Amino acid sequence: MAPPTLVMATRNPGKIRELKALLKDLGIKLLSLADFPELPEIPEVGATFYENAAAKARQVATLTGLPALADDSGLEVAALNGRPGVYSARYAKEQTFPALPRDEDNWRKLLTELKGVPWERRQARFVCEMALALPDGRLYRARGECDGMIALNPKGSQGFGYDPVFWVPAYDRTMAQLGPRVKNKISHRGRALADLQALLASLRGELAGF
Ligand code: ITT
Image 1 (cartoon, protein in one colour):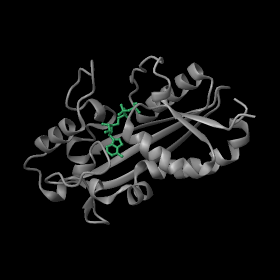
Image 2 (image 1 turned 60 degrees about the vertical axis):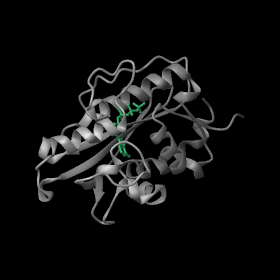
Image 3 (image 1 turned 90 degrees about the vertical axis):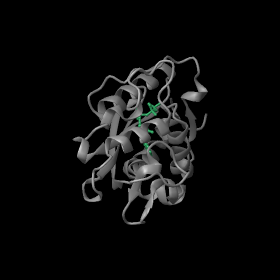
Image 4 (image 1 turned 180 degrees about the horizontal axis):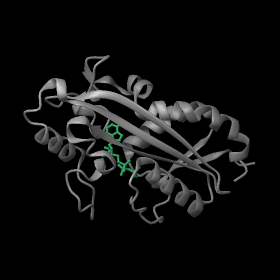
């Protein structure tokens, strides 16, 4: 029988790298949308992270006939009433064709919007909603959050996205300074996946059947 296979329903290389590291011990073959270049772009039209994650997972499971795991994530900044939130990927540029804005454009816009906001009002949190869809219609959900502050200046070169400006108080460093081992332990993505690990392990036999 073929090994159990899971499609990570994302094209974001940073997410792919982290999900691979987090799932490496499960004995599941991991593919991503990079392995399915013919699949159409899935528009993100949901009002919440979960709606987007569920839509991505469902569509990829239907189109590939394989179990699919989607991650919709972003940054909620208290002083901006929760923005950029579900729009985190398109924060610096609403028009996403032909490409999303670069990570650096997004975090530079954030620093500009927060100019003059004092340290004690720079609270933020990363949110990750995950959806696991099976081709037979079953859908599972998990959520993870990670609290921090928006730094006054960018620091560090690891991770991706908003990591250079996301200050983690417990480590007195930005997420981009922490490195993958620590990040995966404390991140919104690591926490969401911790919830799904046991489920994926218990579904391993069934995943092999698709
Ligand atoms: P897919 O939809 O293909 O998965 P995407 O990059 O469009 O990729 P999202 O719509 O979920 O993904 O947008 C996530 C946004 O939040 C994007 O700007 C990321 O850079 C940012 N983000 C998510 N997780 C992050 C993390 O761990 N560190 C830094 N930024 C993160």
